[in-house]
Amino acid sequence: MQNEPQHHLSDQKITLSDITNLTSGGATATLSNCDLQGLDLSQSDMSGWNFEKCNLTRTSFNGANLENTTFLGCRAPGASFLSALLTEAHIEGGDYSNCHFRGATLAAMKVTGCKMIGADLSDTRTTDFEVQDCLFGLALLPKLSFRKMTLRQVDFGEADLRSCDFRETVFEDCSLRDANLSDCRFEDADLRGADLGGVTLGDAKRFKGAVISKRQAADLLSQLGLHVH
Image (cartoon, rainbow, N blue to C red; front, side, top):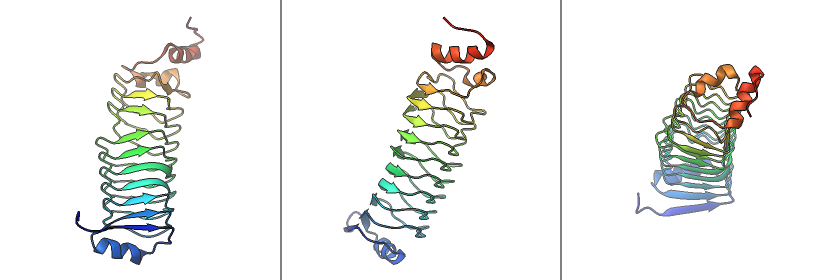
């Protein structure tokens, strides 16, 4: 594959036959400002491809090989990546609201500066998964492991985080406001940089073993009518 030519398509309405012609030859491609809206690219091998500022709205990548593939500034609300292989892929910038990643392999994948509101990452494999500066409001992220990660500017507001592993995780300018934190683990996590709004004193046991700030402790104790000075 390394000896195959690299193709560059820009400002085009891409058809399924265009993709088939490229993938059948084993070539890699860079698509810039292209429109792939609604295409069914399931099971395609697009490993090593680059998508730059493309329209991927409701495009299907179900079961596709997207290893080492880069998505830069794309618009992809409602796109589907069910059971796709995204090992070492990079998604930077863009809108992936309500995308479906259920069952996908996200090992060593990086997600930065993205809007992932309502995205479904259930049952994904996330070894060495990296995320930074993203909006995951209302997203479905049950049982994901963020262990030992440093999360910067990640908003999990109202997200489903049931049974997530946050042990030894550091939160910097993040939000867990009104998230579902049932059965999460926070041992040795540093929550001082997290917005814990909506967490009640009864829920505080979920943070057993974590580090919180005096302000956060005061907010929790204020629910008992106590004041920290």
